[in-house]
Each structure stands twice: as C-alpha cells, then as structure tokens.
Image (cartoon, rainbow, N blue to C red):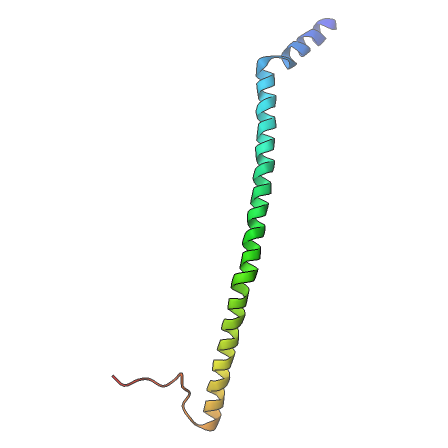
Length: 89
C-alpha cells in the first residue's frame, strides 16, 4: 500500500503534470480575461448603438410619417403631392 502512495506522489510531482497544471491555469486565466474584455466591448457597442443609431431611426420614422400625412392630405384635397411630381427632361 505504501508503494502505491509513493508512485502516485511521484506522478503528481512529475514535470509533465506540473506543466499541464500550469497550462490549464493559464488557459483559465486567458479565458476569463477574454470574457471580461468581450463583455466590455459588447457593452460599448450596445451603448453606442443606443446613443447614435436609435435617435436616427426615430427621426427617419417621423419623417416618413410626415411624408405619408402630406401625401394623404394632398390626395384628399385633389392636389398632387410634392413627392409624386416628376421633373420634365
């Protein structure tokens, strides 16, 4: 029984096992760091999208609604809408 314990301790103290443990530890460290930086990048991208793109989408939607309203009013009044006029060549 003592022989088995000695051989197990020799294997666990071998350079190969130590290098493997170090490599696994390094891999875990790199993975954690990558996940943190990816999370930060996702937060920055999401915040930038909310600040820059969402107001643009809202403004474009309002403009389209105004154009549709003008077109409907022009049709009701019987005048051509300014958007449907074409310039002669």
